[in-house]
Length: 110
Length: 274
Image (tube, rainbow over all chains, first blue to last red; front, side, top):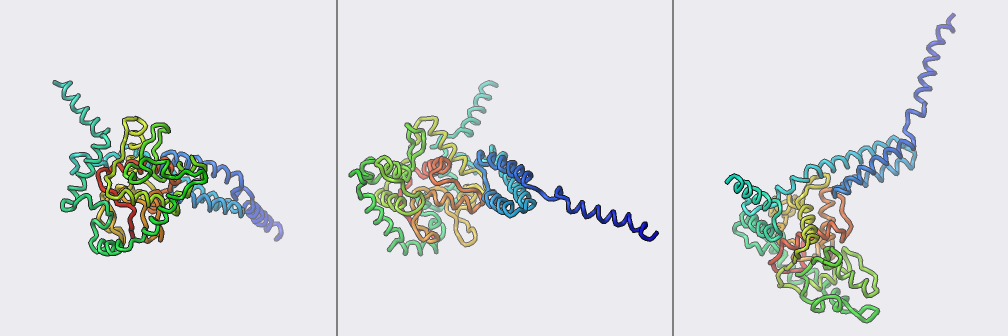
């Protein structure tokens, strides 16, 4: 009788452990490569607009090192940050496309 | 009447949007005349020493035994050293390479590219079967220093020919100078126009006028003589913008624009800076 009452609890504990141990929870190489491709594409766009940041290379390097050591979660976080920096650089490029001309002195500059 | 007004409005608009290089240069001088009404604008060829009296005194004392002197001597020796084929640098340049620094960068209509002095030196080497020299410091900077030294006192005379490719190169350099970039979002203009003469931490910022008259430069920070491209890279990295390769099209166009802005000012390279 006592054993019967403990069974569902035991089942739940085993199930929880299975879920936590599941490989689907950790990023894998395929996800890393997809994140890398995404980051590289945005970085190429930023390079075309003559607007790369020094931080991007550092983040790509850190991501590659993390991936080499098997820490894909960290690697993907670094790639996401690199991509974000490239997006911000692109936002600067977009804004500056017309704004830069306002800084050029005109003959009647105050 | 209405059409005439519209035409006038459009012509003013077009004139502002597409100023000629000479209009840009004159407007820039006017900008600095208003910003520093008591300053002789030609003094701006001395960079921060035009603004900072204390630093200027130290610099003038250094000029008694300038740190670039050894580089000029080494550059002269290298310049006169014949190539393996018996020819030399003097064969590649007008007037034997003496007193011509003020004409660089120039626009090469054959290649459609801006050619800086350092690029021309390495082109000369390659045309004569020699390996090109590293761009930023060392022998190339020394030869450039010697050629600048022989040109001292000449007025900067960068020419932008009536060629749409030359205008495009000039405009690209101009856009680069005025565009904010890097994680800190600084344009060259933010430091060297808006903040010229002001302190950035412990350093007084130089002004844009005359920024191209005195290269290459011996910087105490570097402990050696280096080319303008080295400084471009350093400036980029200081605002956390990725630097470009030396003598990349981006930097050559930037130097073209920057040098044209110094036209009419006396060439005073090489120079020493902090």
